[in-house]
Amino acid sequence: MYDTDSIGPLVDRFPRLFHGKPPEVPSSISSGWVPLVTRLLEDIDAMLDDAQAKRFRVLQIKEKFAGLSFYWKLGPQTTTVVDLIGLGEVQRLRIKPHKPTELFERVSVRVRAAETASRQLCQRCGADGGSAGGRGWIVTLCASCRALPEDAS
Image: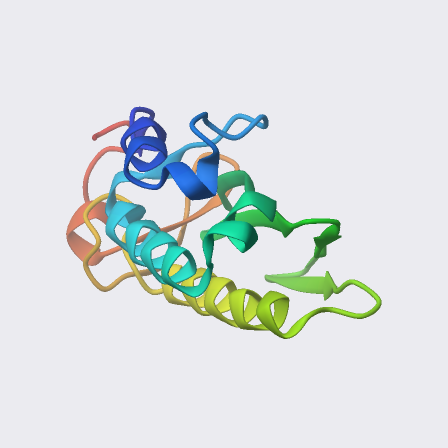
């Protein structure tokens, strides 16, 4: 289900955002979410001038609790993310910097929108989907992919 080669093409396509190398924290993107992450990176890249892009860094991209998790920072400003797991749900708390800049806020809004959208997109194929139980964790799949074996690509 996971496209382990998905980060490399994004690093090549968005050199300003990745500074020419993959994130330091291991990252992977489910195949069905590659277009969503590509659009997110296009939007962020368009928001930044060259000086701002030098301060932006993608820290990690991954699936967590059936949704996209996109970690980033803009200079010293970053959002601390805390996931609280309850019975049948996950609450994501975001703790912003003390005085976030307007640009930081704009990027944050776009990242949250992509993370929210991922919860309705199949991780395997990108079709409309919903959460489903997996081997020890929750995933987001469409009806067709849900019917496939868990290790199907």
